[in-house]
Image (cartoon, rainbow, N blue to C red; front, top):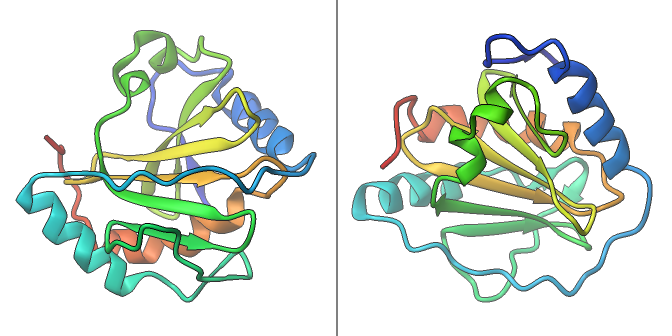
Length: 169
């Protein structure tokens, strides 16, 4: 799995990403998270609908089981679920200079199989990944206790196929 980092001056980026991925694989997750359906503009909505049609039936070996409320802008796999939301707003950390400099212990940027991601470690132990440099922001939340690398690899082809490189609004 090729992993490339897109921030300059990031000597700690790889160790931080490795640590954050390792931490996410250590304990059980809570099933009770509610899923909020994003409300993107028309262009992003179209891209997200195309993504929904291209998503794999399995992610990291887990079968697709979409969350409620049902929407073409959300998807889920397994239980506790790995949740994808398409058309989310840009996360503030994406433009935070501390993240770009590798000075934020809870956020790091990277690239997996041609898709750039911002990874944020959440207070509940889950990991949130948001695509960068795409015409719509796609967010993936991986519960505490789940490996994150398989999910990122499994989703990369669908994202590359349906959400073009560019800058989202």
